[in-house]
Image (cartoon, rainbow, N blue to C red; front, side, top):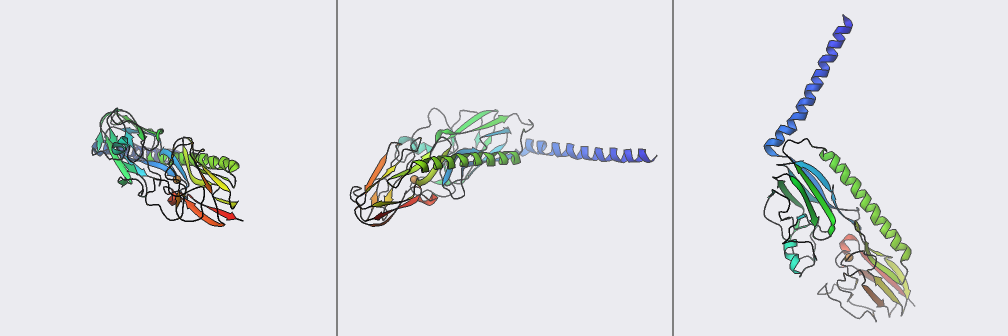
Length: 321
Ligand SMILES: [Cu+2]
């Protein structure tokens, strides 16, 4: 009799667990038919010192059901957008003053999207406002997906390199992954991007000298917001070449000595004879750009990138006799 009672107790326990699992499994599904679920995706990624910036959505792919909402959260100082583009609003130059900058930096008013190909745009997303961008700055963006389909989106700032996909399936389709799984995935993707950025910087370090400083570095996943080598020593009369050449695509930076120039975009001062005051390259974006500065007086000269100094993009040149 004893084993039977034990068996019965076990059976009861198993049924109780089974019922809990069934209820647990059904509860989110039925709740979801009424209200829809909200999923979170990170926009961008960065190292804790902001020096390495990632061009990725975390995670890049997410599977949801019709009626669900995706909530994008800014996760970096570097600006990004969440942009479901159409033929009238293509990827292009993201630069203040260009015709495309208007639609790229403006948030669309709709809160839902019903099929792939509809234009929706978050506007500029970053954890902090960006002084040089004449547009509002957002820290989050939400869209409810009301139709089945594969929705691809891009970042207007970084173009086709930065892509995400929302896979929307019929209401009630079981979810393949939990939010916790997506968070773990985003953490892994961030780690890979940061590793890539660190390797970029390491390679740059091997090429830099006291007379040749690199202005940032970039490939198709990571941006290095730093001068390499940031602190150099030269003799009076010698020249330091600041080189944008390690950026695989156009990234805007400046090399700026002395007080802030009135117009950060324009070059100021004479780089062939520098000893004091404001000297600035202006915003240079082409990967082939260089800025050569000849120092005529001993001293220590601090410089910065006017766009990315907040991310730690600063350096100095010590000039000795
Ligand atoms: Cu910069």
